[in-house]
Length: 348
Ligand SMILES: [Mg+2]
Image 1 (cartoon, rainbow, N blue to C red):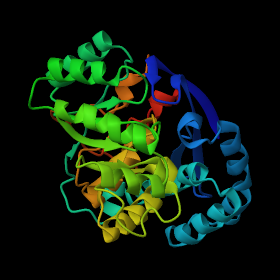
Image 2: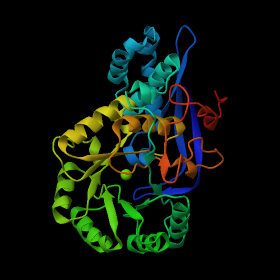
Image 3: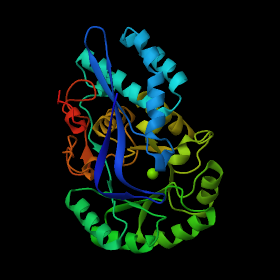
Image 4: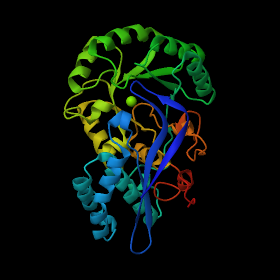
């Protein structure tokens, strides 16, 4: 287990916080016969309330079940269940889950998407760009760059002041055909959400993620607006998938407890009637790769928020777009080759 603090090129501004340095935990598992697997824990305190030190303690608790295991693929589900019981935090379980999938893939000399039963070839997954800037001019610059890079969906954080000004600046810079996705990170009350969405809708909005926090509040806002809504943080709440609260659900590797948990959440969300897509919580490349492997099996209904690696400073992005506005699971066995140098480890 090792920890790193990855610096962002510019502060990542949301309704609740501004992230300048992103702590991550890198986890490796090794079998008696020398096979290795790598995973990553990506808690984001301002988003999910989980501190990296909590994850460290939870991962320590996983040492005993892991060292009891012989590392056989047939033991993976059982082992993961034992880790879920002791670690509890999905962000820690995700790190173990990723490492075990990576290990299984490397041992089988197959990419994880193949182990998940996705049809070959690995698909291109459509992804959105995310505007990090909190000011109009910066947002317009980033929107123009996103369009030039070939994105057709741009996500704008809202609930942080001057939302109408920034959304208008993004629309003007991006042109009329680009989809604009909003994310309020639950910053609004029901009444504020209703008013804000009425005001922003004329700019042409694809959907708004997490306008308010909570199952009950989401239902109320959905009844107030014709705009498509998505649950993100609220997807972690009990009852979120019991019935369809709104159009879509955003799923995250860290919050869902890894690839296995994300596949399960996608099944439950779709059974309730949601469209689904995936997103990162400013994950490193192991987390992003895991989401791309999962997406190959899930086939998201909407563009996913996985193009976030280029927001980091001084760490070349090993998962560049496969074509305009799309990403693909990396080549190689397990979670993929060439991901570890980002963390300061030798590339494998
Ligand atoms: Mg979100």
